[in-house]
Image 1 (cartoon, rainbow, N blue to C red):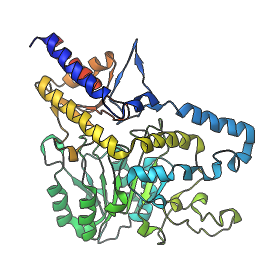
Image 2 (spheres, one colour; image 1 turned 60 degrees about the vertical axis):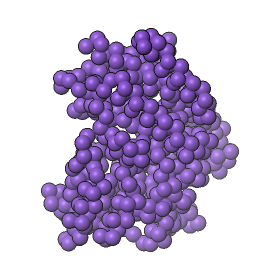
Image 3 (cartoon, one colour; image 1 turned 90 degrees about the horizontal axis):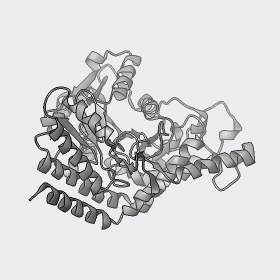
Image 4 (cartoon, helix red, strand yellow; image 1 turned 90 degrees about the vertical axis):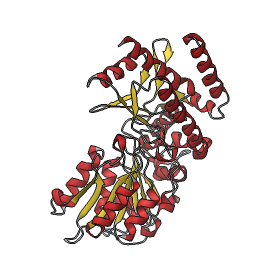
Length: 428
């Protein structure tokens, strides 16, 4: 088969899949950046999701309400600001598989992580340790190390780091369970990701929680790369808490308001916390009393009133998730990422190694790729793709991440990416 015929056959198949896609219309809900006269092939939703078309009108509506009502906007208009965070609650709960009272949109991810560790990392001399991954995202590492030091312990002793034991640097379930068996009595907190940011590996949250709870550990998850990427069932995992950002798969803009989950069994249990006005019981908040009475549920961890201009984009994006449904998005995600895997292994196996697990249940949208060849080959390919309007991202020292997001990516985007890799190989 000639290269031209092969390309035509592949292109026809990819375009046919995209034409039959029941979620194809959702792409039109997003603003796709351009490269010259053409749209980019955007594979960077794992880092910053694209802007929904409805975001700008939603923000303008709140600016107009501010202009028209001033302070009375807290109580007037279609979406009064006083309760604005509640306008995202049900959809946010649906995306992460929680009960509405278990979730709240507030702050940033690392700020939420610190706030919840104040409540759920309660080390003692006998149980001072935090179990994390060796290659945790740096902000998580900085946060847990600073918390350990804040409580007067030494991170050299109180941080237990899980090192990848599988090819590509991924973690086996056996390695996690073995660490819990060996160190469980010393572990105060297990803090692991839903999706590992560098490898794209999905962890089994429920199995980890059950094993850790049997050892008496508290369990929290960083879902930065999982929220909006995978169907989650936080309530049913029985984990104690979770945090996530909203600028990746939740498409809420750079520095977007983050989210937090606290399991309902902690809703009425007094816990140490850093308190703020908006976490006070709503029924008596405006009596301005000196004694803090927490609102039951995740709302009780709020500090300040809702950031309306940051919540508006989240509200818009979550409406798209409600329209699509996480099950349908997941089915398309498996198809897109599976197609990209097939293309890489069929067309450029001599160029790219896939670090992300093969099993669909152990990966989300993201594929983490290592370029074979000289040390600078990965960076060279990344820059080649960028110059041709194919947006992936680079993580030191040698990983390219590409994430076909089902809300706006297509099969033809995956083909375009791999054809560009093949062209780079030919030009090298």
